[in-house]
Image (cartoon, rainbow over all chains, first blue to last red; front, side, top):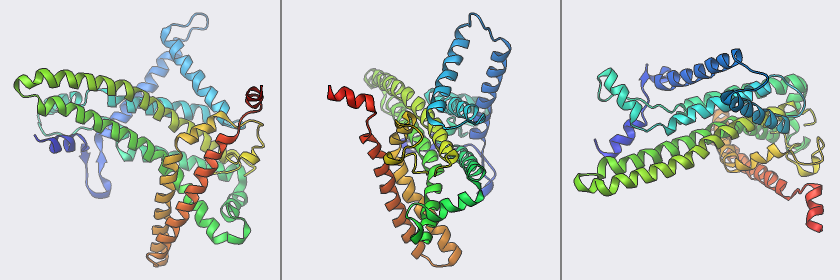
Length: 266
Length: 92
């Protein structure tokens, strides 16, 4: 398999259906499994809570909870019981989906090919390198933003936001288009940022994997294989920072955008 | 986006800028880009609606560009706001 085919093969989803109704099964199944992992872990955790001397894992979970609730308190004006659980879900779920990037790129696709017996089976294991995942999450957040905009400001206030912002009352048609563009750009920037960062990260991992894969022929492997290990380790450590940062930014921006929807003074 | 939170002169909720809002700065680049993309999208939709290709497409892209610059400018001008105690620190 050539270099181009290798990369294309890794960046193609395992799909069912065609046209508009194409389902990326690997994205759906893996993101669902990771969601189930969160639910199960939380359920088990909830049963074995200790008030006095919590164990190591409970401490870890509590520190994440503390971290998220501090951020919600900093960024969110007023009170809404939905925001903190939503932020926590987004943070952990996005982080876990991003974390799939750190599993060796060939490992799970190879195992999948062994299990199915099809040596050309596609499998893309990082759900956030699929624009469908990130856009779906961004649109969910967008729907919540719209809901709270109407709920808090009232329908009149919501329409007023479209009419008189940002250029005042003399440029109403321009204001409508401008506000429309601003609102559409929110989910777009949320989705594209996460997708772009994860896709680029995955691509770098693939390129590093190619060093050992295509260049290491015979004795040359003695040179290329250690180089690949070194580069992989470096990028892995850096990428660990990136996936955390991206999950964190997605969470914080969700809180900030929802906070703006709650801001009546607009 | 509600600009009352971003506008340095209009930060009525608290005396200091909210720390979490600073994370919007991290995404200033992608906000700018997505404003232009959103401009194209809205323009394309309006063109399909009124059958006026490419007037709205170009007009909205321009508006998105202007809005993007305006927004990034507002975001970065938050950097000029220094909380009161830090200002005192700098004087002494």
